[in-house]
Length: 119
Image (cartoon, rainbow, N blue to C red):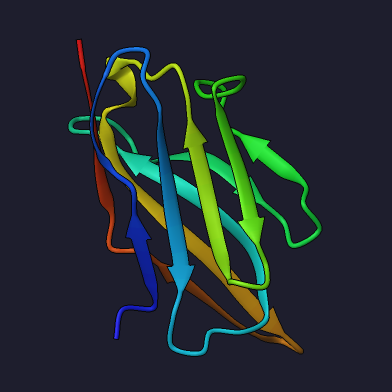
């Protein structure tokens, strides 16, 4: 069973918006930080955004002011609202969740969802 299930990727025109979702499955508990990374062809893997279980957010410089990360702890779900998209945002987006309590920790990753921004 895939631990994290992503949805919401697709093809959008420049200036458009997409909302990605990532839900934890399989009884994952004690989730701490959640976030999104992305990998574009020929580019390094980069952090897009993260959010702590207290709601503190962090964004990569290239997405600040355009992307918003949020989470629903009751649903074990993290969201990424992406506005004013540019071709440079084209990438595979991966969600992650860091879990742990009492010295036992584990990280989980989604399968990736393609976002393509056409000019």
